[in-house]
Each structure stands twice: as C-alpha cells, then as structure tokens.
Length: 215
Image (tube, rainbow, N blue to C red; front, side, top):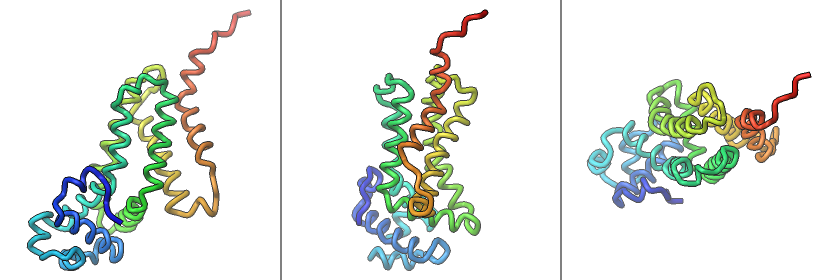
C-alpha cells in the first residue's frame, strides 16, 4: 500500500521508498527500536542516502507524520477556506465533521501511527509534541479562525470551541476505531455529528426565536 498525498508526491523516488520503509519499521518495531540502519535496509537504500534525505530519526518520523496526515489536513483547510463558507454554520460544521470522519476512517496508516504515538508518548515526549505542534495545532487554528468569523454562533471563546469540536471528533475516532468501541459500545455516527452540530448552533436558533410577550 503506497502513500497518496501531496506531500509524498513531492518526494523523490528514494524519498518515497524511505518513507515506505520507515513506516513498516516504526510500526513493526516501535520508535525506540527503529534504527536508521534498519530503516535503510527496509527502504533498500544506503545509510548515507537516508541521512541525505532526512537528517535524523526524529526528522524522518516528522516527515512520515506529514505524509500520512497530508490528505486529511488538506481536506480541512480546503473546506474552511472555500467560497462555500457562505453556507450556514450548521451546514459547514456537519460537512466538516463528515469529511474528517470519512478521511480518518479510510486512513488506516494514520490510525496505526496514532496508536504508535500514544504508545511512545511517555518514553519519547518529543514525538507526541511534534505531532501536536506540526499536525494538530494548525488544524485547530484554522477551525478557530472559521468559528471566529461566524459571529451568529455567539461563541465566547472560538479557540476553546475549536478544541471542543475537534476533540469530540478525535474522541469518537479513538474510542470507536482505535479502542474497538465499534464492537463494544456502538454509537451511531450521524447521531454523534447531529448532536455536536446542534450544540454549536443552539444559540443561532434561540436568537431566531421571537421574544416572549410580557404579561
């Protein structure tokens, strides 16, 4: 299974081979045991070629994270920057939630990588920190900018709201897909999305309601 993302398409053939090899080694042996020697062997390149393309193991892991998440991040950024933002917030947020779940559900590499990052976060906190700073935070900031522009939502803190929205999606994915919640405690996806969007747009609806007549 090959990578399919704008980031990986920009890589040379050797760069692609290295990322493929690195993915297999990181997943099979964990971050600690994944040596540059083993990755070079898995990729079928020399160690010098490996270092000329990627400075060190941490840099290689960052490149791998970018490759695996590139398509997902592009989906979010494109949706939140297109002209269809003229649509009502409930339409945009529902579309965003569906696109996030669709893209993550189909990205088995990303789910596997998240498992690895969680498992290695205590021994190698820099790996988790890099994922947050390079991958998660830009998406939160983009969503925060969108929510800030939608004044009709009457959000007191759009940054907090962005974290709540994204956090709900991540929690659903982790519980249902990573932790086998689909088998143990099934929860309808549409119900999850509808309920989340309803929470975010409740102020819009209440603001449209006529004020009660005084007696």
